Length: 138
Image 1 (cartoon, rainbow, N blue to C red):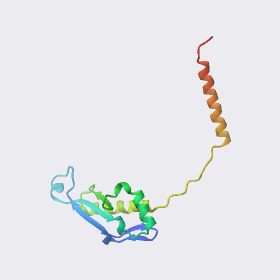
Image 2 (cartoon, rainbow, N blue to C red):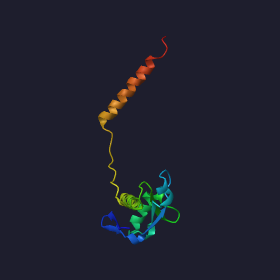
Image 3 (cartoon, rainbow, N blue to C red):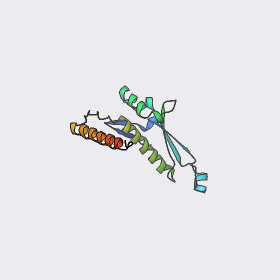
Image 4 (tube, one colour):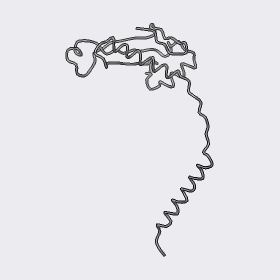
């Protein structure tokens, strides 16, 4: 396995990752039945070389992917070779962690323009008038 570059000068060493292989499912004949091509990569969130705030961010952003033991698990079985699946799983894990560590842009408050308010009220008046005219004739 290789080290993962998480951006911002942060590198996750390969020693922190655990990789396991198993047999892939689905069609594929003898290749699927005989070879262990599915690759699962796990990393413990507490073992990540991050400060407390960054770990909290990862725990919050990837809450759906973190199990009870506090590990993130990524599996790949799309390719026919174990090596290709391992590379794909590592790339996915790297991408997930990079996205989780990316700081969010602060939201800029905006206001509805005076002209937009006027147009909305005029449209409401037109609708109301149209509905009023549908009423019974006296």
